[in-house]
Every structure is written in C-alpha cells, then in structure tokens.
Length: 365
Image (cartoon, rainbow, N blue to C red; front, top):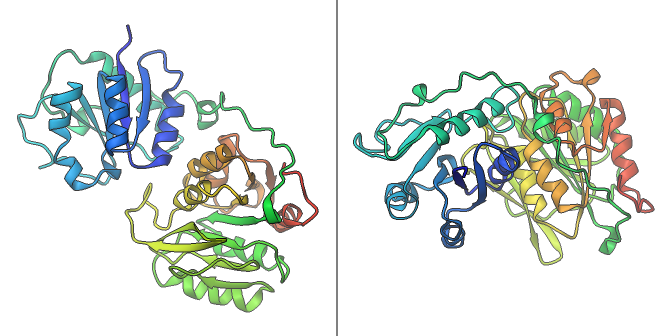
C-alpha cells in the first residue's frame, strides 16, 4: 500500500496547484488539502495521513510553534515545506525527530515543479520510522524535470462555457503584468473608450511610489479614468484601478457593489502586489463574469489564480502573444494551464476586451 500525505496551507493557490500536481501520483497517495483551522484539522484527522505537508509560508507563527506537537499527537511524520526566503535555523530544536526541512519551489516554476514532485515522492518512500532534522541542501532531487507545466495540467479539462444569464450582465476586467507592463498597459488602456461597462483592476509589479505616477500618466492620455487604487473605495464602471506598489489588491463584495481592499500581507511567490492574490479574491465572487488578461512579464504570477477563476466558471481569459511580449514568462505560464481562451498580440488585446464587454455578448468563449 502506498504511503499517504495531506497538505496544510492557508493559501488556496497552493492547495489547488499541489492537489493538481499530486492527484494522479502513482508513488504516494494524496488524500487532500485544507487550511490550518479547526475544520481543516478535522478533515486531516478523518483521513489519518502518514505524512503531513505544512506550507510554512502561509502558517502564522503561533501555529508554527505547535506543529511538532500536532505531528506527535496525530500524524507521526511531518514534512515541512520551506520557501526560498525562509531560514531553518532556530525553527526547531536540534533533537526534533520526524521533521524534514526542504526548499519549496516557486509555484508553477517551469524548471522546478517536476523535480520537487520527485523529491517529495522519494522522500516519503525512503523514510522508515523517525529521523533527525535534515538540512535543506541535503534534501534535493537529482532528477531533472522531464515535463513542462503544460504536461502537469494536461488532464485538466477546459470548461465548455454555455451562454451565461447574469443578473444585470455584470462584468469585471482584471489585468496582470510585470516586466514591460507600463508600455503594454498604455497600448491597451488608450484603446478603451470612455463609458466602459465594467471596472478594470490592474496589478503591475512595481515598488512603492511608482504606481501613482504611472496611473497619473495613463490617466492623462486615456479616455477612461485611471487611478491608483485606494483601500475601501467602490469599483465604478469605466475606471481602471492600479494596485499600489508594494501592496496587495483584493476585491470583495459589499451589498450590491464591489470594493477594493489594500493590504501589506506577505508577498506571494515573491510578489506584492500579486496577480494571483487579486485573481483569487475575484474567484470568490460568483455573480460577476470576469475577463482576465495576462500580459508581458517575468515568472508565472497569475497562472495559479487563473486556474481558480476558471473553476468558478464565469471567465474569459486573454494572454498576450509571444510575438509582442517584452518577456514571455507570465503569458506562457498562463497559456500552459489550459485556461486561456484567446491569445492576442498587444495591439489586439483591447479589441478582444471590448468584444467580451458588449451588452449583446451572451456567450463567453
């Protein structure tokens, strides 16, 4: 019988991606994932896993202090997943048994995720009884990745969306971009007409103080209004809101409106603001259809959130074509999930957005 494991993470993005990566694993049995709360622990205890994987990036400090006791009482074995910016020194005592510290790859990293999966498989299969703490550098895989992210998600069936009957035909446009983004945003936003029938929320990877000047410059040359987003403000059709540099932007329902929340929560995959964080918040809003756009940028931010949006169902996803990208990282990762509906060069993205926001458009492709 194969050993079993259960994932604990407060990040919905992590739970979805790791679940998809391991759901058809022939080496070990993945029993499920949950948040580290009462309901999540109850779910974990019910399936009684051999191993517990804990994502420390999304576990509060007070929970970290109780992980060893949780392992001893319920699971017997724990694998701790560390992010690349976390230190192992002082996290556990030197004589702590049943704990391994390993380096977690960036989510959807094209060169690391398959190797990480192999590392987990080998580690779980090789452990017998208890063992002393092991350094990150000692727990590494010698196997080179043989498949791309596209293969990782090859079994994810794309939803065939039928015409949607949405109350008031409500829509929201969400855009994510990074390297080369300011120029790409200018080419898209300057082609959108005044009177757009949807609000636009934008995450552009930038440090603090730069996004306000970017918003002001775009506002001066666009027909639509463009501004830096503010905490607590209500979304208005025809206005583009850019996440403040160095802060996350999320969208939340409030009565019949949507409001913006700005936070300084920890970076996700090295990014704050993060496209994945914005997309995740939108995936929880059911009565809006979403148009998600991923444009030029390094890395894979937005791809995990795109999966969540597609699961929710009311989504049209657009990715910038390689030919016009300054850096083809983010669009490539998004396309590789199988969740993208339209691939367009930068000069054609605005027309595709308009096609999906017209009042008489009833079918979302």
